[in-house]
Image 1 (cartoon, one colour):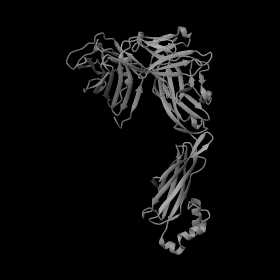
Image 2: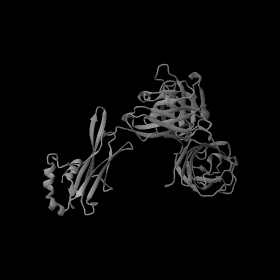
Image 3: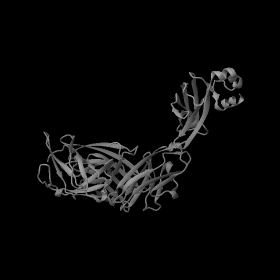
Image 4: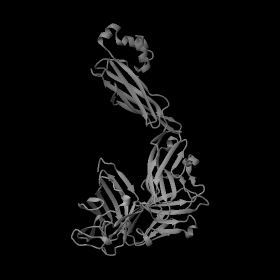
Length: 155
Length: 375
């Protein structure tokens, strides 16, 4: 989703295990306007990773949803901060990436902003490559396989 | 990966279950500890020739973060949506000193597609170029499958100018200057129609479609459109003279009236493309609109093979995308010594006929033809 030309981007660096805060300006610019939806996307995923849905209700009691396979119950939205923030506890190396926050207003223009989250582990993340060749009796024949893996802290 | 048709599919999610893991390369059957249903988030699937590359992230803590899988497609393209994948994969255990890999196969049915009944296949369809002032139809195709449309948004240079929310009344909203150009009753969940576009709206257009809760699957596609001010008038060619002998240099130019963007000028001589000796774009500022006149030069030496039946047919082609395609041509003649002795010297007839009009030694094509008929 690197297609939005003037989308502002902020850079956040976090240490593995720390709580991390991803900013997203949800302030309104039109009088009488209100936030309908706040959607967080990670650049490599089509589905949202976190959402605050206030379309049929007051923003204070908006429905909050967090993707089980991404932040799950580690994430919580803090609308009262200036700017608002998505808090993520116990940040993991695989949380690193570019996130996009999209704010849908009732009246105003949609606002997009991005956060580039870098996560520093105990050992620096290095990528190694692994190849294997094989043919498998299945619907699909796998003839080669490459794997990229990051170094991570052992439990 | 070159040469084949490339196709990239985004936003599909598969589930995998490693409980069925077996047949590792070291001969042991391995069952993952704490194995649960894992989500494989497909980043992209690229199809190139007979190879399909799958990039995905595996949300399994402590093992592998990113995979890249190349597999061979059988002669008929399998319906990915209905098939499970069997995956050869590897686990790594690492210490600061070394990395140990273990390769295993998953069970045939252990990777099951999910989310395949959701929003997919977005495709923007906008013209490459339109003439200023015209009405433009932009469309954005997508397949909702079982998803519900929450919103369709259109952006220009990063700013939303139109959105369509089926649940709202009215479902359409417009924003900014470009929003004022939207023809509302012709715009809907798949298209937006804009009237009277001017060259300042050249640029990147983006459509973004979002399904409804809880996943709000969102896909975007982008297209670039030029809004052109077309040249008002035809190109004109001018050449120094009309008769040439072997060894002479043909020198001339082609001028296209100003436009934005400037016209592309190309030459052919007796049907063969010839490079311009120079191309100039001359600014011609009209108010806020910068317009550019195109001038292309032609300069080559006559060799015995240059003529075709004693003629040189020179054509100047001026194009602005597919919107403006015009030509100007001139027919130059071979000068033969025998003819010259009968008709007198070239210079005398040339100057005698049109000396006043040809102050800069440039002959208009029309005048050239006139001269010929006078002989």
